[in-house]
Image 1 (cartoon, rainbow, N blue to C red):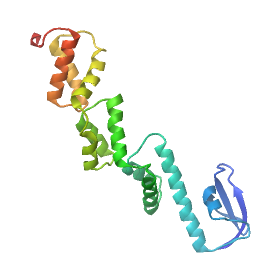
Image 2 (image 1 turned 180 degrees about the horizontal axis):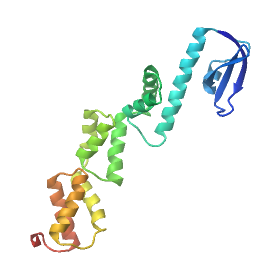
Image 3 (image 1 turned 90 degrees about the horizontal axis):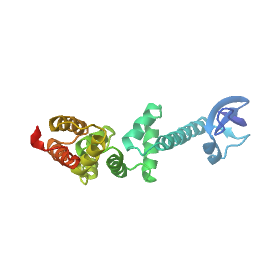
Image 4 (image 1 turned 135 degrees about the vertical axis):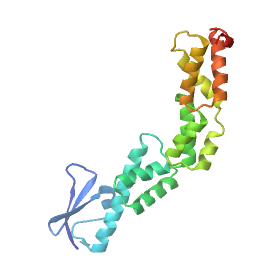
Length: 214
């Protein structure tokens, strides 16, 4: 393919190395890949070697992109795959990258599902059914979801969600209170039995009256 005549650090991105063959720019590589391959001026590159370098470069870029994506919050394996495919990485590179992330324990759907359930319970309580649907949309498998949500206490989660919301409302009669709080809890995926128990409990705790008032 040609002889390397210059290795130049990118002007816009110092983590990229521009490769010049026979005096002309040919392609750029991740600096880590260039170092790993021990590239040097005067080295002859064949077409096969250049292709291997390009493949290694895409793998490294894919890995870097995945790390950035995971830096915001944990992700499911399906989310990582979808992200990389949308960034136009080759399917085989996506497989390689996600495989490596799984080996490192950075992508783990069991741990991710557990994190998601615990996060919901702590900050935005909702029913197991709705939490399971959220995980399903993120590509988590059915069995993993079942294991993650089976320990969730819908009644306690509904209570914590409802008592916080109810504090924001002025006093109303029981039918209005029941309707308003019931609608709120239904939107968060709790079933009617749990809703009825929680609404009655909070109404009693508020000391606002008796259920039979409605």
